Length: 301
Ligand SMILES: [Zn+2]
Image (cartoon, rainbow, N blue to C red; front, top):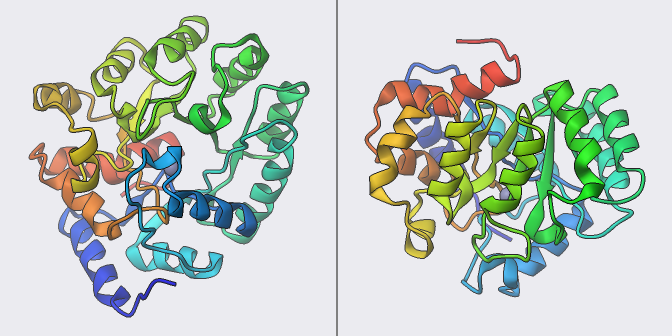
């Protein structure tokens, strides 16, 4: 178990960051909450240095119980967060969605999250979730091992585009590629559903520039910062400095994401990694709070 005796000063560090920007807190669009036994399996996977980690050492920083993890986000001043959860096989998504609906009911600062998988019935349960108030979906192309542009998901994407519900999609080939990761398949999805509100997780790492290109082409495409620019990721998949002006120009469509609790460094490091890009305070305010607040209709600052 990790030791959070340093938690108070860590929370102070996080708060100092957003207070200094004049924000009312942070909005983190990429945090993981899921049924405890599923999360423990994910942790075991990271511990075993499985393909998800690209074979690198990945000590999880926040290996707490669910309540402690939510309390820690509140102590950090995260006003709204998500419960990114995802199936790795058919027949699992509906059950995960039921769990996530319950979690959102007992966790009012969590944006009600749902997921999907290419399988019979997906359009039906996606519709059910949207009608039940889902605010955001998660899709994981690498873990799911599916083609996002395949026929089986077409109707579900259409429904989500119509409803305007954002989908955080892990579709880049980092930290390890999958059969269907990369910008090509996502480009096909967007060609069919140009209004789909895809939020490209991890800023598309390592295919940063290709995914920035999709955001430049499609006005509803956004990217989350999850793990990008951190010392950890820069060692494996450095963000190309030449793309910084494009990142600056897309400042209204970049959203703070952290991957909490599954990160191998303290939470505040993601914030400092954004700050040191040198894109300025206005950019940081938009990325760390305002863009997501607008997207999800949260009270502004
Ligand atoms: Zn994640």
